[in-house]
Amino acid sequence: MSIELPEEGATIALAERIATALPDERGGWTILLEGELGAGKSTLARALIRALGHAGAVPSPTYTLVEPYDLPGGTIYHVDLYRVSDAEELRYLGWNELDHGLRLVEWPDRAPELAERADLRIRLAYAGDGRAASLEPLSERGAGLAERLRSQSLD
Ligand SMILES: Nc1ncnc2c1ncn2[C@@H]1O[C@H](COP(=O)(O)OP(=O)(O)OP(=O)(O)O)[C@@H](O)[C@H]1O
Ligand SMILES: [Mg+2]
Image (cartoon, rainbow, N blue to C red):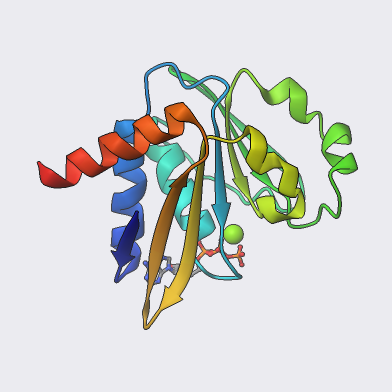
């Protein structure tokens, strides 16, 4: 599924649509956010975290690796693997202990095997002055989410 994002507002609107399409029980979900520097990964992550109920700032997890948000619908873990060089480091990060929450992962390509356990891959790319997103379900429930997103656009 491909979506044109001509300006930043469109990236934010996509995040809001994804928030609506997520189930109430989002514990254990993993969403991968790929794209080169400046592609809009953090813009989308920030908007998703806010759409799911967080009102304050959303600092970059580049140095902390993980920023947790305790929200009514469950914890969101905003993860940035930019500085991680192999999957081994995920263990130090306590990756498996984050599995009761929704893991939203920037630079997941640093640990390619994550894709096997993820639900949705969102790839952001430059497209003229704007961006384009491609969404790829990686699990059955991820496919359900993509289906709900598709039917939203027909509303
Ligand atoms: N759809 C869009 N069209 C045009 N500009 C956008 C769009 N989405 C985000 N931007 C802008 O792109 C810039 C970079 O966005 P952002 O920081 O989210 O990227 P990133 O992928 O997280 O980058 P990095 O890998 O460097 O952290 C920001 O100035 C943001 O406003
Ligand atoms: Mg970023």
